[in-house]
Image 1 (cartoon, rainbow, N blue to C red):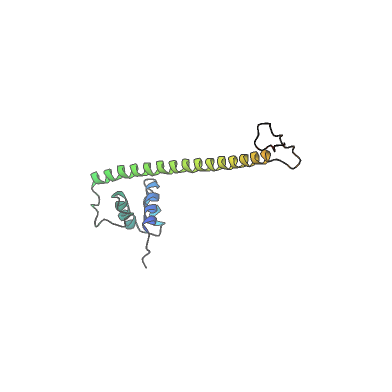
Image 2 (image 1 turned 45 degrees about the vertical axis):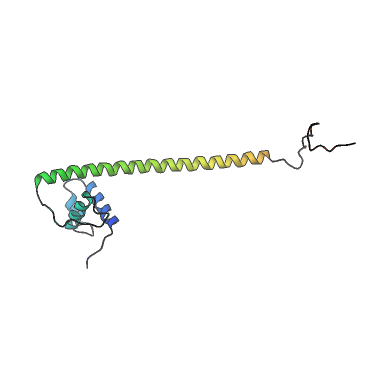
Length: 139
């Protein structure tokens, strides 16, 4: 029975595969729920930008050394880009957490300001000044 993989699962498998050290890739693939042929096909689609759209290449050129070297360079650039994106994402998460904490602190400070600015029942009201329109007129 063939296992079906979503485009997201395939993409993650390719990214994980690219992070496996050279020389350990076949062993890593043998421990996965997909075959080496699957990962080769998915990798080609990923490199061509077709994996997320569900498009798979019809064939592969196999062992062409020039093409393989170009593929390795492209894979390294994609791997580096993915690592940069992960680093940026982590920075944004830390920044968002810092902003949430600052927002909470400001909310507490505003709450304290309101607490201290409310008149208590035993507070002495401030007297009205002579020019104040709220002062009752006596005749």
